[in-house]
Image (cartoon, rainbow, N blue to C red):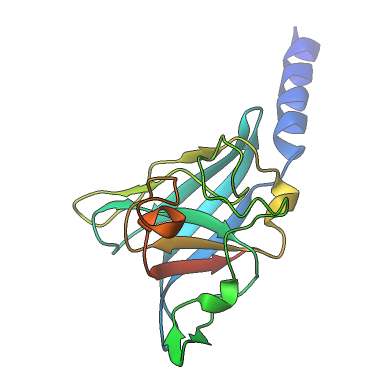
Length: 172
């Protein structure tokens, strides 16, 4: 019996150790640069894809666009003569070149995630599932939260209508 218990514990530890979680620190961003830290998002692998578990505080309540962006930067960049928050992160991660915003389970950008929910107190704690992503897809990328919601379409507004980039973190 003792051997059996030890074997069960060892197998459980081996299963846990097979894939390390990734913790991404998240900061407010604006046209001046990277601001205060607002928490973190822990990314873990599951049989169904990657699970993004936020632990964030101080955000505007409601639904927010949530995406993996192509570059590992949260710095502002100039566009049309104006500095734009976190523009150095580039666009949504789209290695297949679909040039299409869509559902996380669909055929658009690989970096399109389910919308992030922020409660009335400004906290985001609900995990989201990205069924098409693998942990290797996150290396050298950024994770972005937009000011508005995301309808997972390019109509009536491009990129789901999420608007400005307000929170960003870099995946190492």
